[in-house]
Length: 222
Image (cartoon, rainbow, N blue to C red; front, side, top):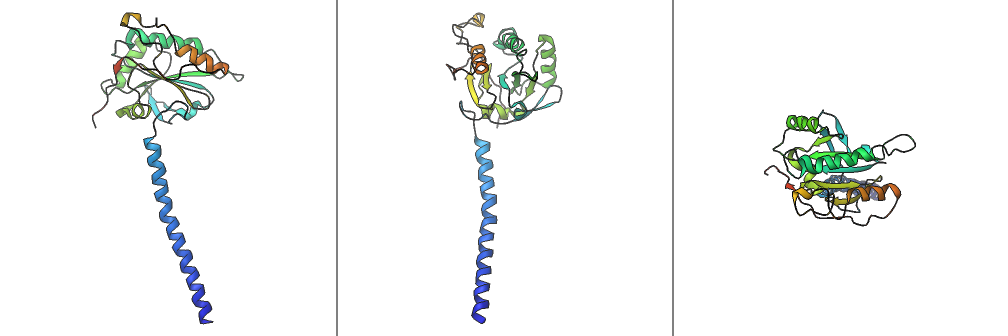
């Protein structure tokens, strides 16, 4: 009888030890997963990193809110000569052309989100700029350029196109890089419109990644 009791106590002790190990392993695993998610960077063909940012009117936007729609992320600036009066109105015009494409429920199939990661450009200045140029899609403020770092956005402009399943399908310039600022919009090969058309029509995207040219993003010092 004593042996039976001892055996029972030994089994209970073993079970307690296993439970303790499981409890210590679970937080460690959760920490590892969180660290992996934190260091994840945007890669063409992989799920686009999720984010939540606030626009100039204080409204929050989650990338996950746009699942089922094609999303164009446009890193922009209110001071960069490659943007002001150049790529900004061109990209805004493309958005205006595509916003009428809707699904059977009347939902836009393509949405554009501007992202500003320059620590030198305030929300108030961006509001005035957006009104002056009559920008037709929201600009989100990326404080401390955390999302720019995850997406490896380098310049303004820098485009990232995400499909309806939230896979990153294109990252780069709107067109082949022009030799001169005066040639903006006249690139030999255009990438933005053909990529959107290919995604809408279920076709293969010919070019998925290109170099960019513009003003460097003014990141905070860490």
